[in-house]
Amino acid sequence: MNLNTWEYILRLTLSALFGGGIGLERELRLKGAGIRTHLIVSFASCMMTLVSKYGFIDVLDNAAIKLDPSRIAAGLVTAIGFLGAGAISAHRRSLTGMTTAAGLWATVGIGMSTGAGLYAVSTFGAVFIVAIQAILYHDHAMLGHIAATLHIQMEDAPDALDRLHEQLAGLGLKPSSSKYERAEGILSIELHLDHLPCPSHDLGELLAPLMKQPYIKSLLW
Image 1 (cartoon, rainbow, N blue to C red):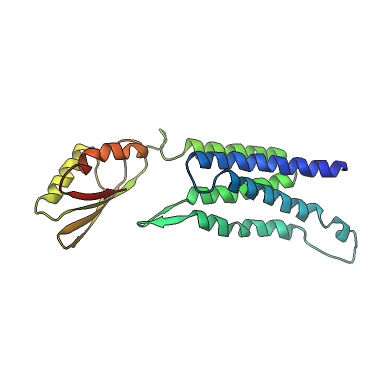
Image 2: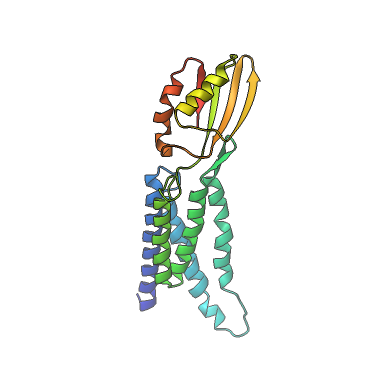
């Protein structure tokens, strides 16, 4: 193999490592798109960039032929949209998977920059994305605890709401907005909390006393 071939293989290998590193952070968070997905996205983006940049050199040697090799690379940015859309899901008026979708889109950029030989840019990009996703995952001391939405079904008793708000206040939870629906003796409540007194992963433990109340039928967040 000539020198150019080894250079191409090096770029493909680096793109796989960068994509795998980003995917590892997502997989540790138990996300659907993990190591394999990010590795393949980065590797494929690098490979297509190599084809776009170097695959048509023999054709471009002919002065009578005018081509734009960058069109293949440009198509990668929009083509990743279908994969990102698959990572996003809606649940009770909230969206999940946005960060993973954005990470996949950024992974394309890292694969492309690696394929183009911009090693410093792709290395910095991979480290930056992993750091941002790890440091700012859910809770961070600089940002405070994230908001949450509680979905409660309870008995539609005369004093049920008063008891609920009293117990929520005792847990340090102050809803900023609420929505109520009554049907067949069941009161369905949607409460939005702008600030949590604990990290989101400890919310279940915080709400445990409330879930034990006999008038509470279900509690989701």
